[in-house]
Image 1 (cartoon, rainbow, N blue to C red):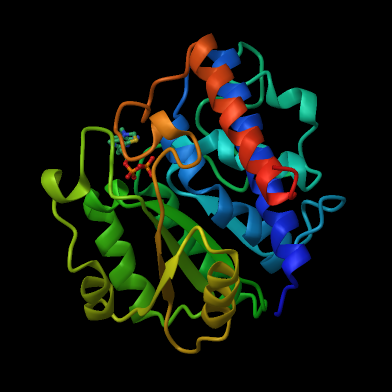
Image 2 (cartoon, protein in one colour):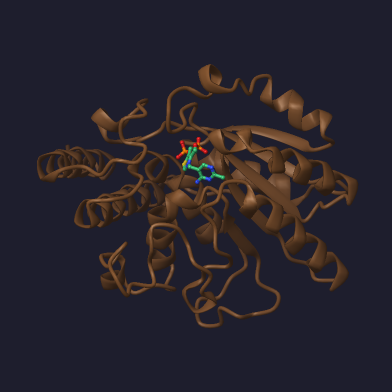
Length: 284
Ligand SMILES: Cc1ncc(C[n+]2csc(CCOP(=O)(O)OP(=O)(O)O)c2C)c(N)n1
């Protein structure tokens, strides 16, 4: 799928607008995970906007593609995209983590809202995605299952058991996407439990491996398209990203993994993002 420069600009602005919603949600809740919510938003948004077959008016549609946020702590990113594409009311976003809210700190299955499974315990979402992909094969459904994983999440042993099973069953309807932002909760992934050579590991497990620049919209779309046209193997897209991206003081640090911004930080963050939006729109 070729996209025009205008479409690319519009997507970039949407992504920045969604980042503002995420920051507002987490700031109002005074709790949550900004770093890993900001890093992966381009992937989730482009999936929902350009790649997946879904219908917000018919969330139970049997033939829909399925997205699973295996790194469940990035729930604000999922909720903000689901709001942008019509599943969740915008005003509900700001009930994040409040008593009685359906939008808790980690996703709870709610098909009406487009939330396919409950996640938060790292590794579990990915293994569930194997079950969904197998079920689609058994039902002869031409649908894709997408699972978004954190790179720190790859420390979980269950990930590698699931990876082995997916290639054993030749699940070419399964696409794993790794947010390779290089930082987990306690520091750099390479310091805590080295992952490299990551692409080689997935290849050795029988996966088709694609590496992309996760901040480049064309690269993301091409990566997903190649993945969707892969046969007899599951695909993993290793997507290089920046933790906390587009907010200067949140970038490349573990500090905002699970820490909300205070009022002053929130305001600075919004000003920085607004500047970028204006730059893209050619107003600066
Ligand atoms: C089974 C399990 N162990 C520990 C945690 C606590 N935890 C939440 S986020 C996180 C780090 C995840 O790092 P990464 O996947 O790189 O997340 P990202 O940087 O993309 O936010 C940990 C250890 C958890 N949610 N589940």
